[in-house]
Amino acid sequence: MENREPAIKNAQKIVVKIGSSSLTRPDGTLDTQMLDRLVSVLAAKHEEGAQVVLVSSGAVAAGAPALNIERPKLLREKQAAAMIGQSRLMSAYENAFDEFGITIGQVLLTVTDVINRRHYANVQNALSTLLSLGIIPIVNENDAVVTDELRFGDNDRIAALASHLIGADALVLLTDVDGLYSAPPSQPDARLIERVDGPQDVQDFLITDRGSVVGTGGMRSKVAAAELAASGGVGVLLTSAAKVGEALAGEITGTWFSPTGKRGSARSLWLANAAQAKGRVIVDDGAREAVVRHRASLLAVGVIGVAGRFARGDLVEVAGSDGVVFARGLSGWSSDSLTAIVGDDAVHGARPVVHANDIVRTRRS
Image (cartoon, rainbow, N blue to C red; front, side, top):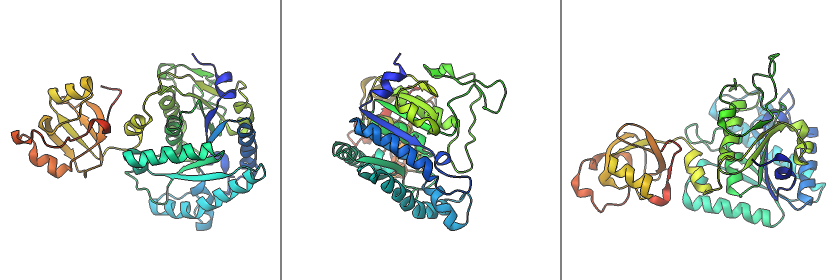
């Protein structure tokens, strides 16, 4: 198993994520002292020659005071707060990094940017270019334009996926607690879990969804993100933002998630985890065999049912006749068009329902 000290200290590509709860004061305003401390540590890592990507929450929280809303709940309120707060957040980062002579670049992502093959390549090229030029990209979800059904959900998952996108050596998730505990830290019998070598190491512990007043993700979200990154060969450190200096120096702090899988296609991970599927395509055993064992395209002739409403290009689940989902991919058909040809023997030779380049098998397959 990979050890945290060399993995973090010697990382040449590293993704660091900080949440809203760590960047804001109780009144919802930006904690500039915490931001300055984070920037100084990242600047030092950058000066060592490492390529650094920062995934930062805080835009909604930074903009909320201007709306006199402690925590926006409605989507339109969140979007309004994000429109105000994103520029304020980036201005604070720009001023802080300027002290070290470091240029930053803003990267706002939506699910569409990363499940569409062409958009995905553009995002990957953009990040690679920024890093090669010595610029620190600051990534956030584009809260101003996303919809509830087409969003990543939280920046923990964005950070995990970004670590695969750039081929990171390590991911550091900064939060407002010391690490992962066996129970909520307020409980007297809770203990810090220093190392996780696989999902089985945490399955018996109570991990809550509850986050802070200003955050969108609780500890469950962070553990899921850590497991996602680790499944693709990236080691993950979950620790307190107050200990960011110790963390990036490779000191023993927080919880270390050892890599559990091999590095694979970053886009496959995006397709498998980036967004909620719009619908489901049910196929016969022959089609399932072709996709799972032969990595073939899903053809219309194998479709036996359609569930939900989706357009061409939308993300869909693919399930067998037993109802078990075994793949996800981008549909080449709308739900209406696909429903119309189910059971039609004349569909041989029609375009694929999901092309092999746009389909990924799930862990359940």
